Structure formats: structure tokens, C-alpha cells
Amino acid sequence: MFSDSPRPSGARRWLGIGLALVLSGSLGVWGASEMWSSANAADGKPTPAQAASSVAVPTLLAAFNPNKDPAAEPVRLEQEQFQALVPQLGQAEARLIEIYQLIGQGAARQALGKAESLVKDHPNFQLAQLVYGDLLNLQTRPVKQLGDMPEDRPAVREQLRNLREESARRLRALSDRPPQGHIPTQFLALSNQSRHAIAVDASRSRLYLFENTTPPAAQDAPPQLRLVADFYISVGLSGIDKWVEGDKRTPLGVYYITSSLNPQNLPDLYGVGALPINYPNALDVQRGKTGSGIWLHGTPREQFVRAPQASDGCVVLSNPDLERVLATVRTRTTPVVIAKELHWVEPEALQADRDLFESHLRAWQNARVQGDLAGLRDLYSERFQAQGRKLAQWWPRVESEVRSGFRRPTEIRDLSVLRWRDSEDTMVVTFGEVAVGQSNAVVRRQYWVREGNEWRIFFEGNAG
Image 1 (cartoon, rainbow, N blue to C red):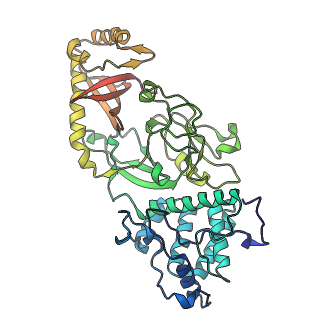
Image 2 (cartoon, one colour):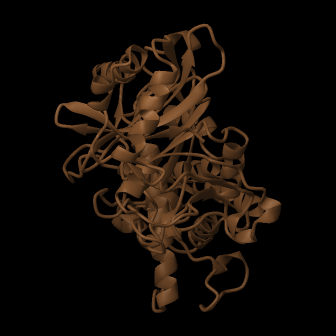
Image 3 (cartoon, one colour):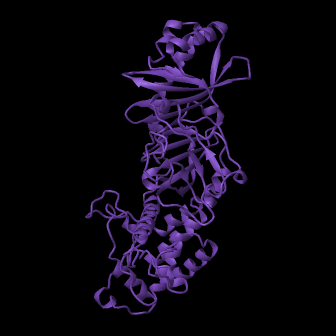
């Protein structure tokens, strides 16, 4: 990793991230020297700092302070809570966090054994290698800070900065967990055709994978999403909110997985596979955003993960984590929400907004069935654009559809409604429209925007 820095022989060449494991800035700092001294003392080895400190070491993850108030009581992740989380984490990450926990409990010798096993199984896991190096150094001296090593070379400083931030984000995501049973605010409705859903929180470098347990008969009820896994991810080198091709930013919005690419046809850069998403979507196109080729993909063989901001705009997972995603999701029906920060609510809290929007969707459906072209026209925005056509050019197609199915009752099935709010309030709506008594449905996707107190369509087409 540190190819341009001196390397002591053996495993101790990996100088480390003194696991004060602090989420820098907002998260408060353990006295690293005190913490490591306490860990050494637990192994029966006096250290130079031992005489100056008799501080008990609390649970490591207690460092997170969600209120950003140094005087506030920190949130603690107890052992029982951690054990409950293990099935949701990637295997390697769960093992790393177990090591953190052991260090926090003063069990440095036990942590060392776990770390040695982890780096043997995953030699490309750079953060784990650094932890292992710190634990080795701990046998002879206290480790005073996160990455207790000379930082006289720019490459070393950059590597340590990235690893510190990776550690910070992993811990923040684990200590600041989504409340049980809560879902991201974007998921107003999700058809049972979407067996799974994905939400990315860029502020935590985290991808959340949900199983959709909404029964077919509960289309009018809030979605029932169960969080089944969450993983550390990397986003664009320049951050998020992509606007132009080549800006090395990850887009924000509501997307769908469009395909799954065979890793045998991909360079090693993409690891075990890739899942393209439909960026730019209709909202992106209308806003003039450019670029393409935004994927969820893995890492090359020599890397376990990337730094929190390191891709050309894609969302990058470790290969073991991506393999789990690849084995779970389906193309075309799996939504992917990418947000700067996710906000979590009880599903029932979305019911009023869902009902209000669905009244507009029913008005659209009724106007079509009744042949009410004037009422239907009022539900389309003047900013409408689809397939390069503005509303005046698109409207003859709408009229033709209405007249060809005049007064033929239809119903909406398999409704999904995903909300995106930034400078505007928009809905991405996918559903099957089928004539009563028929079985074959036309699967539509519409984009709606809130204009004043009304919702209006600014894009529609077949879902693909």
C-alpha cells in the first residue's frame, strides 16, 4: 500500500490507525494514548502512559455523538445490539467491528488474534491490515493517535486520511442505526413486483438493501420494507450531485437497475460484476444533466474497498458485498435511491402524502376512461418532455390512446411511487395499466412534479 515509504520487516510494517476510532470533528475524541494504555494494561504489560492514566475504556462505538454536542451523553452500541447487527453486515466488516469492540473492552490480545485471522483471509483489506499493525505495535508501545506514524510524505498523509475517514464512516453507520421498522422517506409505495430495494446514504458511505414484504392485496397500504443488509460504499472522487459528464460525481435521485453485466466481459477495475442504473433519468435530462455509465460495481483484485470518495461517479462496493447484492436484486424492478443523507420514518407517516398523490393519479386514470381530454390536459405540465417531444407534439398521442380505448374501464396494478425532493418535489411512478377483464398490462413510468398545490406529469413512457 505505502509503496514509497520505508517498510519495517514483517507484519509490523503496517503502522496503524490507533483505534481511538473517532469520527473526526463532530464525533468527539477518545484520549487515544489513554485508551491504548488501558488496553495494554489489560494484557498485563505496563506502558509509559500507564502511570498517567487509569481511565476505564468504554465501548468503542460510544464515541458517536449524534447531536454534535461535546457535553451530550454519547450513543452506545451495546454488545447485544452489535450481535443483532452481524447478519446485516458484510462478513469482513462484521469481523473488523468485532475487533474494534474487543479493543474497546481492553481485550487487546484477543483482538490481535482476530485481526491476524482477518488479514490472512482478506490480505487486500487495507484498513484491517492497519488495525493489525497497531495491535502489534501495542505490544511494545502506546499508540497515540489514529494512524500513529510519520506523515512526512504526501502519499502517506493521503492514505491515512482516507483510511481514517473509512473507519469513521463505518462506525457512524453502525452506531447511528436506522430505527427498527423505519424506512427512507422516498418509498411512498412499492409494488410486490419489486422484491428488493436499495437506498444509498452518501454521508455515511452506506448502501442499505431491503426486502419488500408488501403482500399483493395490500397495494393501498404503505410499503413493508425489511432491512436485510447494509454495506460500506465509495462514491465519486469529487463527491455527489452529478451534473456534467466527467465531473467525477455520483448522481442524486431515484433510479432503477437496468441490467447486470457479466464480469468476464469487464476489466478487473469493476471486480465481480456491475449493475448499471438509468442515469440520466427523465428529471436529470430535463435539468440538462449529462454523462452516462453510472453503475454499482465491485473492486479490482488488489483492493478490498475504495476510499469514501474515489470513483468516477459510480457506487463501489467490496466484491463480497456486491456478490450478495447481485444474488438478490432483479433488473428493471429494483429501485435505487441515492441521497446525500437518508431520513427514516415509520411507514404510516407517509400515508397522507401517498393518499394525496394517488388522488391525482386516479384523476388521470378516470379522465382517460371517461374521455375527458380537458381534465386530462390539466394534469400535464407545460414543461412536459418525452422522447424529444414537448407537450404540444406529444398530445396527439395521448388523444389517440384515449379515443382508442374510449370508455373502456382500466385498472392500475403493481403501483410503485418514489418521491424525490430537492429544489423541487417530484414523484417517480411505475404501474401496470390493464383493461378490466384482461391480463396483459402496459407497464408505464411517469414523472410528476408538484406545481403549487397540484401534481402534474412532465414525462411518461413505457418502463424499461
